[in-house]
Image 1 (spheres, one colour):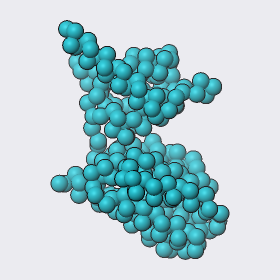
Image 2 (tube, rainbow, N blue to C red):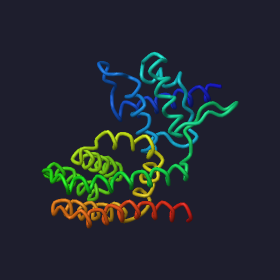
Image 3 (cartoon, one colour):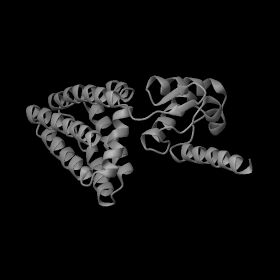
Amino acid sequence: MNGCMEAVAAENRRVGDLALAEGNLDRSRPLGPQIYEIVRLNIILENLKPNDRINETDLSRWFEVSRTPVRDAYQRLIDDGLIVARNKVGTLVSPVDEARVSEGIVIRRALELEVVKLICARKPDLRELDAVLALQHVAVAQQDHIAFFKEDEKLHAALAQLAGLPAAWRLAQSVKAHTDRARIMLTKNMPGRMEVALGEHLEIVDALRASDAKRAAMLISQHINSAFDAVKNDAAS
């Protein structure tokens, strides 16, 4: 019995620490969306793994909040397919869903094609991308797949902002969680994957600087497709 209690206590400390590691709550802002984002990120980064138990009571205790904001976050996680309720077992972190991976890639590809076309038409100042690309270089040099993922997200969010479509990128977030989980697994386990993605990013930005919409569209499509192909190949192996 003592061993069981110690294991439960260790699990509670583990998840609580992970939540704090990925971001503290800002009590001046709505709590539900923040809890959702923190737990979502921990699942994507594999800090919370498939079949880890997670429930409203745990989340409320870990974040030291009432059940109301936790319930909102919890429902969004269920809707995203990131957690699943099972009879007599409780609620668990779900496995990666291949159908949702494919759906996320298709939606992201359609969005990003419009993003690069709009950037070429609008011709905004792209210098803000330089810092993100520099940090991607650092992540590749250090073989830090988590840092690379975070900077990759920043790059694509910045592109959507430059295209005047920030809300569209936020909408894409709701359908690409499983795609992101697959991307994390690939960059961690597939040698050279980060280098390939960085090279593709550099080519895309060069095409955007030249306002070459046709080339930018071709490159962004190849970039998304290469990730899709890598996911399929990994699933088949």
